Length: 416
Ligand SMILES: Cc1cc2nc3c(=O)[nH]c(=O)nc-3n(C[C@H](O)[C@H](O)[C@H](O)COP(=O)(O)OP(=O)(O)OC[C@H]3O[C@@H](n4cnc5c(N)ncnc54)[C@H](O)[C@@H]3O)c2cc1C
Image (spheres, rainbow, N blue to C red):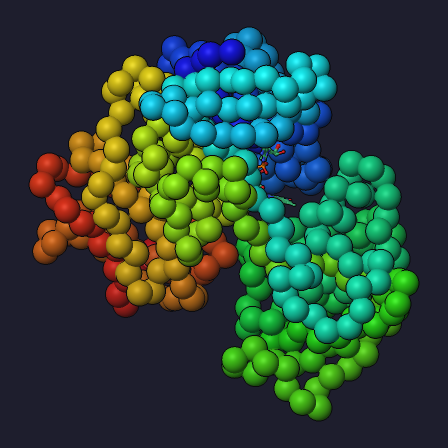
């Protein structure tokens, strides 16, 4: 099979990319390893999706349904239950070896490739908790999948480690399903998720949140019987003498998401160690010509609306690349010291750019400046910047001759 654009992943990013590439005249094939398209949205049955894109509060499946129907209407093929066995770039084409139960093992060749593979959750192995490994320890997303897709309650008395969005959403979900949530334990001094989830999921349901504290030990041999928690100091080390034992049968982890890029990394693209995703320009093109990245595979987003936005950008540029109208970004974007990261990390001149960024810590009343040398390109005031809340900024097309763009933060008197 030969096509213009292959999209790997039929989550919201991949579906948007496929639609936009199709609308811009490209032949498109979407590859999805699961049996249904929609990505993680399939298991997110609460509402709050689509507020930016549709000005409506949709559930995850409702949000995904709109893109799935649009893809069907455009007659774009989604190869489901399909795995990528091998991926290589030969000359200027991407050669994929795929496998699924209908076609067996088969090759597909494409001019452009969009990686929309989403992210995975950090596991208990990555947060180093002492104790045994009994049944009853789940990542929050696994528990979400068990309850919302399969109809199983993973436990009756739960402790949640980490205050990421999925953990807070699952705390509420467990209460609604009749389980007890003893508390959410967060090692940092503030929550890791969105303020709206703190209010709607924890505060509204009287679920205790313990900041500056962590789980230090899991007890139980065949099943979790309890956990030991402790307060932590400024360096996140547990403070001796503060340990207490909490009986429970389940520990959920909501300790971060990691962009999933294992399939494209062997292609030798530049990766950003802070985001965990590829270095991209404002067309979402990576440092490998013709290879695009979007959604949570590029960097972890908090709103699906911006995931879809990046998919649209990647799909349009991938179609443009097939028609030879897409150059590669080489102007470096430098996120200043108070910023955790900025995406894209590279820019091409002459094209508007959407810049997504996060602050490194909570900052009140600040002015963001985007500069090229001494020239201020744009400024924006913020009453508050918080690392969990991703920000978005539109940058006008850069003139030719700019070599580097710098983002910097300084204190500002602001009323908004
Ligand atoms: C567990 C979890 C729960 C979440 N819950 C919420 C929530 O409640 N509310 C919220 O606002 N946001 C939530 N999010 C954030 C959510 O991920 C994003 O809003 C959005 O779904 C990301 O879209 P995406 O297309 O980038 O990735 P995904 O939705 O993850 O889609 C990626 C798709 O790529 C497929 N794929 C990956 N690798 C391959 C491969 N090698 N071959 C073929 N297919 C592949 C996957 O099967 C999947 O269908 C959650 C994220 C996770 C990880």
